[in-house]
Amino acid sequence: MFRTKNIVNMLLILAAVVVVGILAFSVRLEASVNSVAVLRTQGMTCGSCALRIEDALKGAKGVSSVQVNVNDGQVVVGYDSSLVKPEAIAEQVTGSGYGSSIIQVLTPEEYASLTGKNIAAGIRKGGCGKGCCGTK
Image 1 (tube, rainbow, N blue to C red):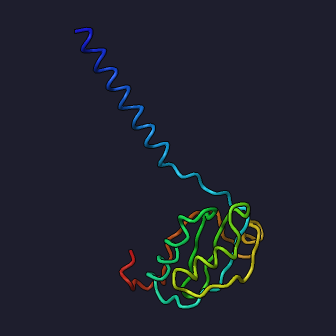
Image 2 (cartoon, one colour; image 1 turned 60 degrees about the horizontal axis):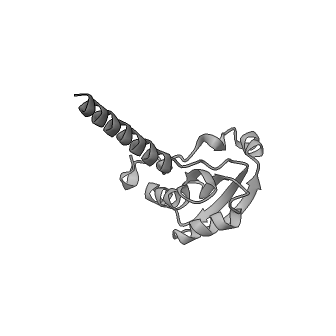
Image 3 (cartoon, rainbow, N blue to C red; image 1 turned 45 degrees about the vertical axis):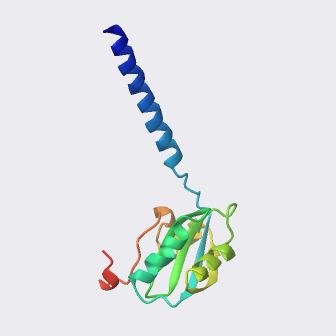
């Protein structure tokens, strides 16, 4: 009886260690936002375009926040300037099929002062707001 309890306890501890180990490797440390790149992006027409750009950037090294505005043709990216340069971000957008160039680079505080928006809000699903493209 005592031996069975020990085996069960050992298996529970082993299972807990495995679960904690898996979770530890799946956690993605977010990049800190110390710069904001505002990009002019050509060719975006709908919510699917916005999602394609977000998907191209959301896993990129150093990128913490992506906001796509299809109507204005802009992509606003919060990023860690020690990990990625704005030119590389624009190249990633271009690589996803949309021409992109840098309009300006700001600090998060400058961006908030100009727009009243907090860039550190994280990756936000964009779109045209018209319900097209099957976006939800």
